Length: 241
Image (cartoon, rainbow, N blue to C red; front, side, top):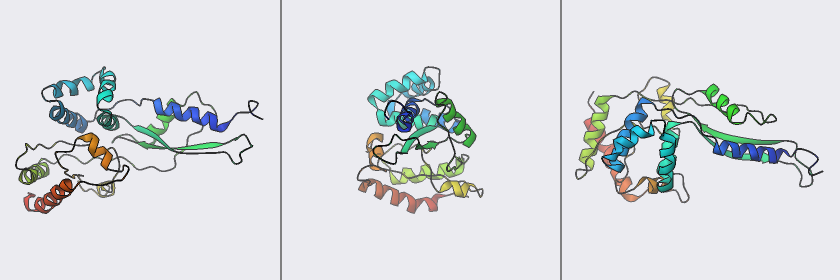
């Protein structure tokens, strides 16, 4: 009967809301620090270096909130490279429309930074849901986050190739942390140095780019396809061993 028994769906809904608003600790990897400095300098000019320092200071959370108001897509990207992300993607509960559900399960996609492992993720989830005694947490699938060391020679080859592809633009190369996974993690497991590099049109801003990939009507623009094709054809000729 309603109101006389616990509704598992209601409990889980509250737990999901708690996860949505939970803020995992910020972590600034060396590659992320370098990337932030260069990206913010490109995006905000001379203020960029100051912004990157502020972002990595105790007031970083406040600054991130301000960026989110004007640049929500860019802020979402920043959050994903400085902390573990939690996204609830599946919710299941209830067996019959006239029965109060006693069980409910939710699945969360947690994306970890290099150096964070499954124990870190589970402990963080437990901390977020510490007031929900009836909610248990279990690991369904795990893939370790990976990161290749920076190879200055290879980066130099990438830069010179991009200068040839885009001769009318100033080109620089910065380390990058992908807020997703790719097959490169399997190659790193056997000792290969792998960089995910896919140049796109410099005319695209980050918000527009974010809407193209894995979005509604997923697509790539023609200019980016041409730039990427030319880059991939020239790079092997410029790699120094």
